[in-house]
Amino acid sequence: MNLKGKVVLVTGSARRVGRVIALAFAARGARIAAHYNTSAAEARKLVAGVKSLSGADAEVFRANLFDAAAPQKLADAVVRRFGGIDILVNSASLYERTPFSSATAEDWDRHMAVNARAPYYLAQACAPWLKRTGEGCVINIADWAGHRPYADFGPYCASKAALLCASKLLAKSLAPEIRVNAILPGPVLAPDAMGEGEKRKVAEATLLKRLGTPEAVARACLYLAESADYSTGAELTVDGGRLIA
Image 1 (cartoon, rainbow, N blue to C red):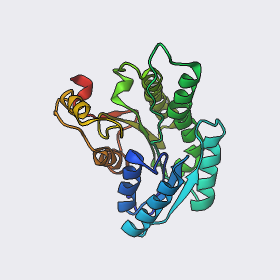
Image 2: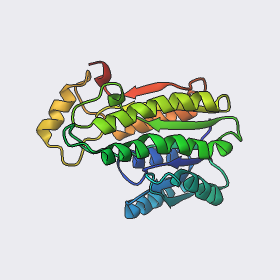
Image 3: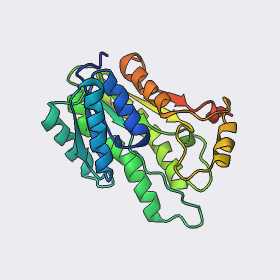
């Protein structure tokens, strides 16, 4: 797929990995629908960055993806602004420490709603527009821990496992016009509060013995959108070998 002029909706694009993904698509000439929830200032900076980088059209869209009605409202708003949607990148994610002994039903519901339910229903809401060209594309940003969960993040890991299942369901439901694939990042961007010692420990747990970068995830997104025209229902790990270590 030639990305120039394509409309790309990237959820969670105001900060961290989502921001880098949005800028990578913009560098290819795509028009960017930049979703955010609370990071309004960062989202506006992203749009300014897109316009200065490539001159491509870009706009911000706010939605709280915990709200079950938000996916349809977000898709409708993007279509009103851009006239359609060609690519959906579900990057928005909730990541909270929830030790087993203190995890609540509310913790579980928040993670499942944002990390699994919202991507599924965003794909549903965007599907009529993604089908128009016969080459629509959905990319779900999952996590290697969806296969190998780690302690103290149970609801998060379970929600990413659910997203992996949802990706396969969507691939079956939306074929042949729309491809749906998942990316499984590993340690590509450490939490802000993580110390250097812990970062070294995390890096050592990978086969490549180093942390990755958000740019590696963005390149994987570009590959799935531009080149992987015979891949759907696939899982692409970008984890330095962490999953099999």
